[in-house]
Image (cartoon, rainbow, N blue to C red; front, side, top):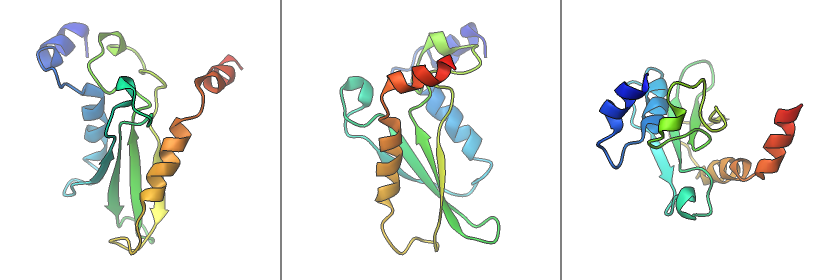
Length: 135
């Protein structure tokens, strides 16, 4: 998408989340008839909240021999309106995490621990990421 098209599509919307929409668009073909369970933060990280990921979605998956839960993160990439990320190969870190947990469907036990795990992975200090990028 070019900058002009990006501004036209998202520029007038104060609540635009083009990155969030892009992640949802990639997951929709995998789970076309399913509304995911979603966990969000009370205060966004960019507004001073403690959790680095703004959200985590969970889908119930029956593909393959083992039923499982499929989690996807929102926050390693640029989620909200950001003209600097337009036209690049990637934004921010350039990836999101997914996690699959073998489970009966629906899950028989709470799975909030997965969200805590993913948030903790997002909390790794940024200098570590810089160090790995230099190699």
